[in-house]
Image 1 (cartoon, rainbow, N blue to C red):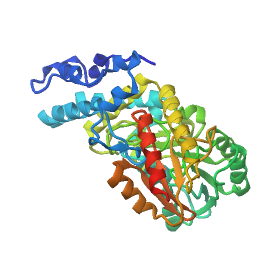
Image 2 (cartoon, rainbow, N blue to C red; image 1 turned 90 degrees about the horizontal axis):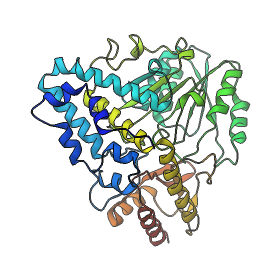
Image 3 (cartoon, rainbow, N blue to C red; image 1 turned 90 degrees about the vertical axis):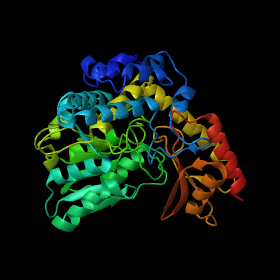
Image 4 (cartoon, rainbow, N blue to C red; image 1 turned 120 degrees about the vertical axis):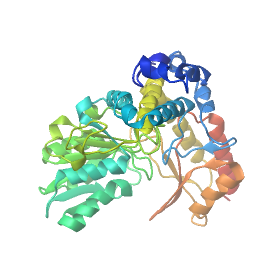
Length: 418
């Protein structure tokens, strides 16, 4: 794991003068009172320590970071400190030291995703990023977008808008459920791509079943046909180790407020330097900076908190987190497969699997009512996943999830599915 000192993070809030000059709060003391420091994570702090730092309600088993992730105290402290500092002198602080802190947070986020600083913008969400991409591609009547039947509305509606407004044609790949090999997915895309396909738009990890698509293979297919590859990355960074350059996509939109455990309303948008002339949204007309004439005033505390979240994940280690989360997911996958009445519709452990796991319920069970029952009777929070052909629940464990959490879920499923 990488070592990252507490003082290095605090210095990123704008330097020692910013940290030590305010009488309202001594950030060094606040950091000492936290359950852990980043330096301790670098020395191998266990998962339970991070778990104890969350603000979750007592007795709650939270298995739904695929919707919204909880943020640790370390990140909350950074947000609150920045917010209070901002309100002491809003204009001077917001366009001075705290603007610098936001830019430093963006730089650390770029390093986390494996791209250059001039390739990454901070947004509000994956949806915000996908909307910017769609607006910036400048599609015209007759242009085609190739996507899948498992896209989240936040990654699909932007293309539907241009279909309605500009006559763009949407082609939809039906994903196998579940596919056995990456080649099966790539063949499905290859069968439907056309000379008029301008964009391939696909999720890195589908929100429905946690299928991890072969993005590098799709990048090769896009290159062969002169198309752009746009990736909805809402369900990957923070749970999986993501390097956008290695994926070879042209654009990648993410929601740090899910698996990256960052403040709500923060997003990241990568547009590769080689694609910038082809993806030119209004929101980036003055550059990629956190504040420009095209962005307007930003959520200053949230963006600084995003930087703190990146620091925490980096200190633990992207690969270590992926190993931990996938081990939990795969263990649950094996246990759930042995519960009568439950069908695992997510990929088996292997290269197509991601941390999300979706379980199909018997037709006699209403999935929404079942989600409510798990919450009321057991304090277990999962998401319902009802769509054509699927009457399921979606489970998203993270680094703070314990083996006992999953055992309690399995026990509840065995008792309730009769």
